[in-house]
Length: 183
Image 1 (tube, rainbow, N blue to C red):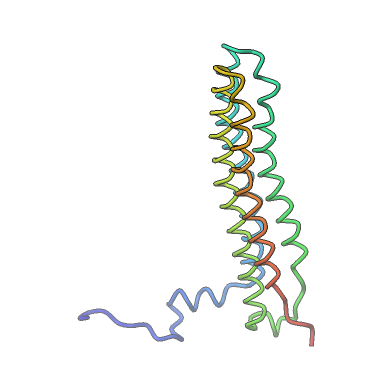
Image 2 (image 1 turned 120 degrees about the vertical axis):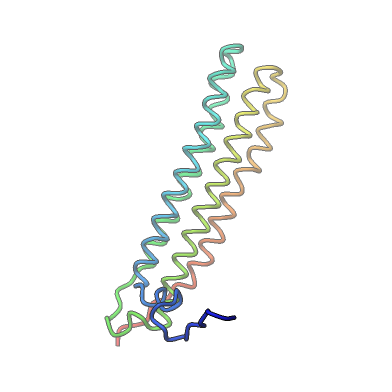
């Protein structure tokens, strides 16, 4: 390893040192913002995919418009999952004395809320895409053959369960967020 140096653990130019010096409240706030923001992005993307196919297929078969709105509602539920988890994560924040701001327990709580928000946000992003794509195929197939609607709707319900799995994992992870007690 000529020309390279190995940074010491206490070296202030390392990423590990930088991550430890960022406030746990900053990590918590980013996690909460990602939970709601990326969930809403997933819902919007799913609504876009479903809505465009629904409008296009409704030209051939106008009867499908009202009953295929359930796919848009499933996409909207993804955003609601993100809002619910953001509210739950917000209630986990507690005030700690400045002397314990960088205590291991504070860092763990901040990282737990951050990880919970990341997991919920990206699980709901994937769920929104999944529900949007299945909703699109549901609208298109229903325009061709109305007997396929219920069959594909069942598959769409299974796709929307992905978001619930993310919410459950996020709630379990946020249970690890315990801030130090005031001394």
